[in-house]
Image 1 (cartoon, one colour):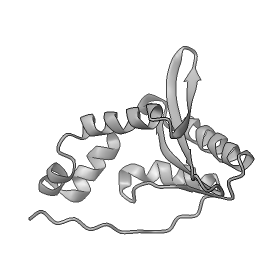
Image 2 (cartoon, rainbow, N blue to C red):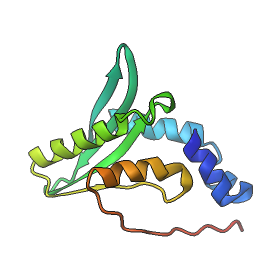
Image 3 (spheres, helix red, strand yellow):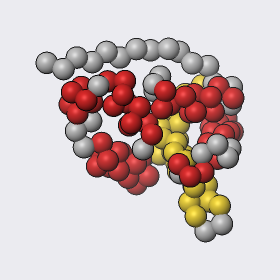
Length: 136
């Protein structure tokens, strides 16, 4: 997965291994929870008979706010507007649901550059945040 390869390059092997010791398993659990825990609304993008991406949206219980919790596109289908379509669909759905403030979180590393471009294209404004790590 390009994102975790990017994380490994940015963090270095010692910090990366401590932060993401088994990233494949933890990522699979995160995706499964988003899709089955009942708090997210999930949609998939299909091309032919193949799932090419999905988006999971969570609405705040008090209303007024919502977030794209997860958005993923099959690496073989990236650069084909799948992420843009899912982002725009999720944003429109949140608006129809009464959300007045939508958010999406992503990484600032090179591996997340395509995601940042997609979200900015959809009209989202970035708030740069920095998280520091140190192996002890």
